[in-house]
Amino acid sequence: MENNTILVTGASGKTGRAITAALLKKGHTVRALIHSSQQAQGFDNNVTAICGDLLTRLDLAKAMQGCTAVYHICPNMHLEEVRIGELVIQVAKSCSVGHFVYHSVLHPNIKVMPHHWKKLQVEALLFKSGLNFTILQPAAYMQNLLQYRSAVHEKGLYSVPYNGRTRIGMVDLRDVAEVAARIITDERHFGSTYELATDEIFTQLELTDQFSHHCRREITFKETPTKQWELAMVKSNMAAYAIATLASMFRYYEKYGFSGNGRVLEMLLGHKPNTMDAFMDEFFNQ
Ligand SMILES: NC(=O)c1ccc[n+]([C@@H]2O[C@H](COP(=O)([O-])OP(=O)(O)OC[C@H]3O[C@@H](n4cnc5c(N)ncnc54)[C@H](OP(=O)(O)O)[C@@H]3O)[C@@H](O)[C@H]2O)c1
Image 1 (cartoon, protein in one colour):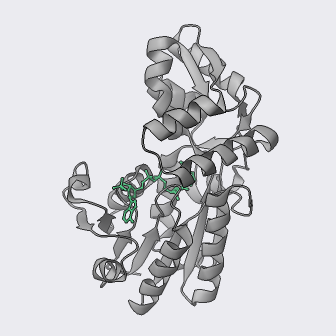
Image 2 (cartoon, rainbow, N blue to C red):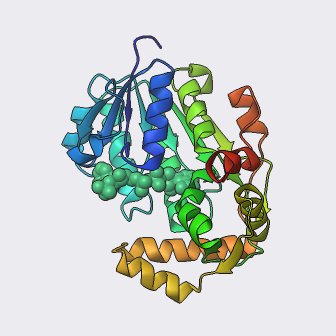
């Protein structure tokens, strides 16, 4: 596909910004569908930011007009995730978009994690759509750890609402974005579903050791009691659906862990994925 214009939906979030930056770096023409004009801040001048609502067909149609590909990212923990997916797929069909890449999640087939389960339903809609599609299923991002940076540095504390034995494998969002930029104009990927994970798995206690190593001081792990976490989220105005979904995800993580395998990511990148050690060195080194 030549002369590409790519629309990134949900572009104002952390995933959208990373994907947009990677697409631009690769030389693509990028449109970013953002929720409000204030969110245009931080995008490169070469990105065309378009304000719109993912639940409004007309906004989607205006943004998608003339696009060769769509990279669809649903806002995190959105109650209407399936409806949004359905609308974006329908509009992509009506705009004759050549490639639809869907930002799903590792293991979407887990019903007790509603934001995973909803992604499985969107994947099924894509299978039936007749569109050329690629599905990316990333593991949890290393970048999620950045929200703990000030507590780690200032209080010497790593605190999450699940226990220290919980085993999670994480991927660098920049590796996911690099894959997105590589595959979006390459029709050899049509019809594929790729798990994007790494081989590394850490318990929360092991992660705490890594924090201690990179911060060059003793960091303590503390499990935040669920009730306390829920109260803090209510106070921060998080939607009830998002709180319940996250709580359910934490219980799942605790019981079964959450991780994948790095082979596919390495193959798509053409190099080794970033490691937790390198990520910590970049962002937690003091
Ligand atoms: N975090 C991870 O480790 C991980 C791993 C794998 C997959 N994922 C998936 O990645 C996706 C994106 O997550 P994220 O954390 O990057 O998202 P995010 O930061 O929550 O960003 C979502 C963005 O979408 C905007 N938005 C909300 N409702 C909208 C609407 N109706 N129309 C247009 N824009 C709207 C929000 O703006 P407002 O603030 O104005 O509402 C926000 O800027 C999710 O589906 C998540 O499940 C995440």
